[in-house]
Length: 218
Image 1 (cartoon, helix red, strand yellow):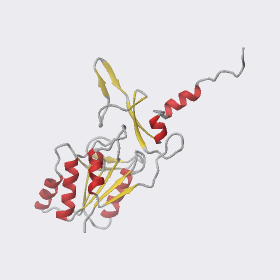
Image 2 (cartoon, rainbow, N blue to C red):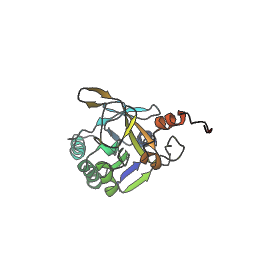
Image 3 (tube, rainbow, N blue to C red):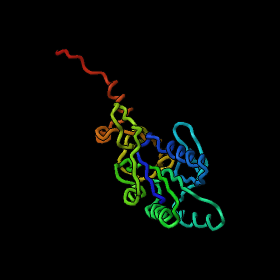
């Protein structure tokens, strides 16, 4: 029986690396798969890992329909044994339902990879629907670490070096402000305590460099 798999973890936990490894393992056994991604760090039509691995992939736009894609490919005589779906947090709930339909009605395995929550600690719609529908869900065992050395559990967004907890859930490129130069947007993984305190690595370093007053009275 085909299954809908969901592999999840924070940034830096090796999701894209595992997606590429999963594709490699199945392909070497003669299975034929199709790879998809959305908003990958390397640009369009590419799935990439932070270890430097790359593979061509189809982009999942807002209006992309997995069911129509797969049925159309099969109708044209193409073979599809499995789908690799990276950055699945950016898929819509409807697209996740299409993937579940592909599994159930076409008996094609689907492997999804993505993070659960955004920089505001709220579930992405795609990830939430995967939690509800997946046959198997696995939290990756490669633990990303906060700057303090503790296990990172939250994804933080910074704009011009300052951590923010409000804004659009998905930001591709810079955040534009009217009449102002574009903000430099970056992401960082933190433990829950430091996410709550908005204490990023840069801010922690800055605080540690502030000279303490000498313990002498006047």
